[in-house]
Image 1: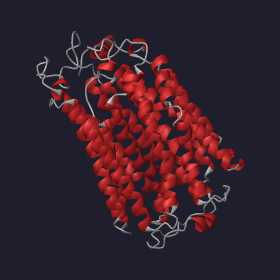
Image 2: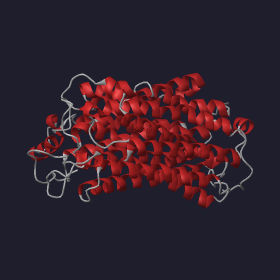
Image 3: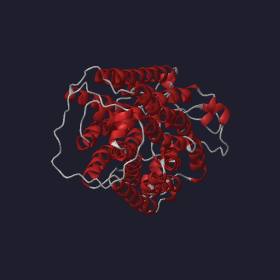
Image 4: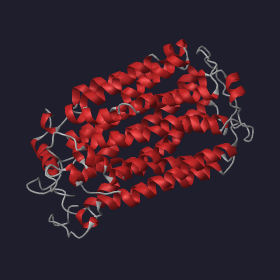
Length: 495
């Protein structure tokens, strides 16, 4: 941490070592202005990139409800009768031109989970390649590839369930490189005392993409047909790619429009944190306990996140019995809360470090605890309030919203412990954190064959228990300073 007077803070033990100045040597006296800055422009463009990314990822969750023949759904995954029909029939003529498929509940689970079979493969390679060649092209083409494959979703569905599963896995391959590539870019762009703000802005796009795409997909299904869901979001992805390639640079040194003051501010703030080693210290990295603390936290958080992301529309329809138009809006409400918490927590985390002298590790632990234990509590509560629609939506919203605090917790801890290898570290942790996306929906579907409230209580309790476990492990073993193995001389500065 930077002490109030700009000099070194006392150093005795782990917490003190985490409180030494982040910026040493000559650097601009004040941070470069935010307005029109290259680093915040990057954050905004990344925000829209992850907006598109998650819109492309989650639109199938809503469209699938309309793609499947209702008779098949009723036969294989019975709608619960425990809750009264909540919605009056919609007084509009519904477009019925979209083709329907005979996919049972198990098949739907595999379709929803297939994305992650491609996603898991490119995590670590994505981080490694981004470190070697930069993240700009890798992230850009990752999203472009996903957008193009999304355009072919209706055609793949016509070919059969196997073709659709393969296509979704290919989309996963494209998206798999995006988060490691972005982390690698931020290792060169984000001053230590602005990390939480910049990363929370960029990654909050994922939540807003979910917020917008879920209800919008429902409206498109209702008034047009489900095929247009994929055409619309695919075209949006291509437009974003053109802007990204035109306006973004891998590093401050290569940016054509950055001011000299801002460039010096960024470079000087990172001077003592980055390694000049060309080889990756794989063995020390994989032996690092702080890395494995992030792995456990990331896995645990994603179990809950992906279960809700893929199955919340189904829960709204089968248990709470909302029609598809309401389903899209109400499924999106929790992610709006998460988006808001991400933005606010990023501001709060950096203010606690810069103005209140909180250590990096203290901030990461506290925000991770709030973002994991809080959602667990409200998720269990949502399962046990029965058919109270208002409370169900409120608890699910609070549960998902509180998860936004993790964006300033374990989610960016990679940059604290090894900024030079942040993309690779995120690739490692996200590889493990992708497993819940692969098996979570399948397990949840298998645990809810009759769609009773009791069955969903089991799903929610399992997710909550895993979340709490991850929070405990991260709190006990996480670190907030640059690790020795991540520095060139192994005796460098520790923040």
